Image (cartoon, rainbow, N blue to C red; front, side, top):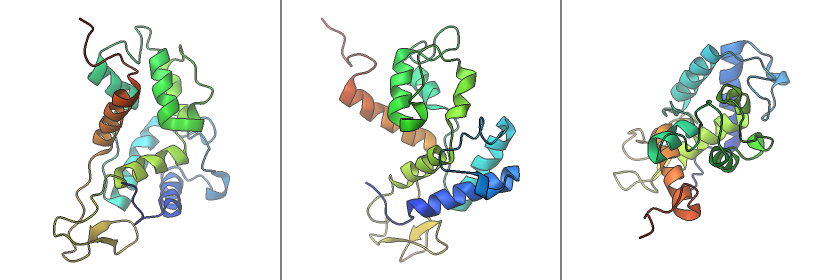
Length: 192
């Protein structure tokens, strides 16, 4: 269910603030589609700090594994990443579905170590929003949800924080839904 408690603009603002706070980059030089690696020269250690800051602001747990790593765990080694540590055709198909415009120029055979360049403020904001989209319609108390500070979702009656799935659970559930619909990784049942 698509949530409407925390707006996309607020999520993007907080993601941009996390980038600025972590890197010291001037906020005016960041666009939603800036590559954190190619355009902003963000280092891998900065990614950890940014994710931590985003988690603290929203009370969520960002994904620890990349979508292709989840594919490998769920559907078998070599399905998304080949023996040369390059993205396969199926891996590209999934990344295009998941990352939209960020993955437009991606081709099979792209080395895995080039993929962090696909991360943008927009992809981070989408990841946060995807977590919030898994918010149940009502709290366990049967009440509506609200935010007191604009970023943490709580029960309107009890004030108890929403229990949300982790980013990894969201990605895994998304992959299952995509597989069920598109059968990218083959039929669930082998032919007789």
